[in-house]
Amino acid sequence: MSIQKKVMSGVDAAWLHMEDPTNLMMVTGLAILDQPVDRARFRRTVEERLLSMDRFRMKVTEARRPGAMPYWESDPNFDLDAHLHYIALPEPGDKAALQMLLSDLASTPVDFSKSPWQAHLVDNVMGGSAMVLRFHHCMGDGTAMNYVMYRLMDTERNPEAPAQDAAHPRNREETSLVGSVLKPVKGVFSLSRTLLYEGVESVLHPTHFLQRAEVAADSTAIVARMLAFPPDPDTPFKGKLGVQKRVAWSAPLDLADVKLAAGLCGVKINDILVDLTTGALRRYLLEHEAPADGLEIRAVLPVDLRAPDKAFELGNDFGLVFLSLPIGTADPLERLVTVRARMNALKESPEAVIFFSLLNLFGHTPQAVEEQVVNLFASRATTVFTNVAGPRQTLYLAGSRIERMTFWVPQSGRLGMGISILSYDGEVMLGVITDAGLVPDPEAITTAFTAEFAALLRRLQKAVDGG
Image (cartoon, rainbow, N blue to C red; front, top):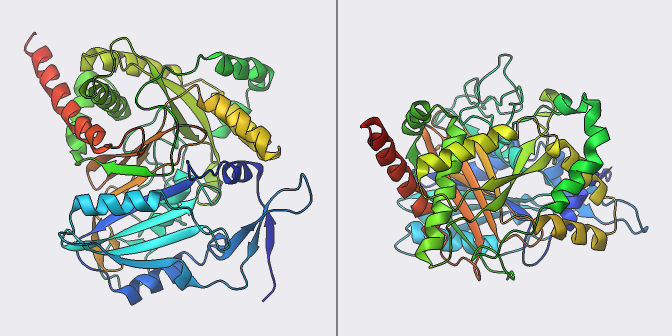
């Protein structure tokens, strides 16, 4: 077999070199299934639907020549079984046991002598099973993660023919299920003609800004303004990082209820979700006797920059914007007004395109230089926060119904927390990954997320009653 080689893009190389023992650059997806999965069928599904993408059979090689880019090369010793892992949870096989397993996986680096991805099939999970898919950020971003996950899925438990996967886009436009921070990218993923994927990462069309001459002219000033941000204040969410991570996910919210609340408030669904998350972080601080009144912290939001014809490719094609979260505001409606105004203010911001260019530049610089610059930007924030709209309908994996789906994002630099929201089949869930030494109990944040929604509904009722 001939060895294929492909030079890594600057942005992919930047994420490769952000790998650190205290912050692994792994994107992790979880699907909780209603029944055990046949291992042979699962293996066949992975082989047929993932290995058709070359990158899943290629490993990363660093160039020997100084200044040269790392590259992908086909692994002559590729063995699918080295990437598939089979685990059974100990009794009682509950959510706590699954959370512990995921926390251990989130703390474990991938083997770079092989293609940097893993799939874990977990038995004895609340009467069913689960699949955990992990791959390194240099392979792709959150949009790519969802694309890969959906390639594995069907719209029927036992389809007669292989499902049309996400590689086949629809010809008509769809509106994002969860809404968008900025202007939505046109394009959807389809699975058996009915699967919709377009998320809050899909919020910018790159040409929207690339066609504006002032972006290039103003880029230096915008970068200077971002660097002029003061470092985020000290909170329990920030500090020295360790290698152990903790993950948690919330109970699901009914998306129809969230949509109704958004309509009553005259805001986007995404505004509601950001408001709830901000309130959950406030609750965590107060429960841990940390100051919250008047506090503002920044979240780094990924913004998908894929052109429509690139929507179904692996790799990293996104920029970043900074959103200040009004942690110090106690009233959920008052906080929502602030969140909405700040989200709207990002609509015309060229920060994402400029930051993408910076990431590409970082990938071509010595790793030590990249690390210093990334840490400089990361000090201006506290968390990564991404929000993705998933499939609207029930999906199946190797014959088992997917009951819940969520995912977790890596954090670059010295950031110690990642927040992710995913909607699926009429529900929406919050995922949180934290440094165990800083926030050993991220489930307190996910529990507070659902409590904040109840509080918002009570506040809305009070407002309707004239209170």
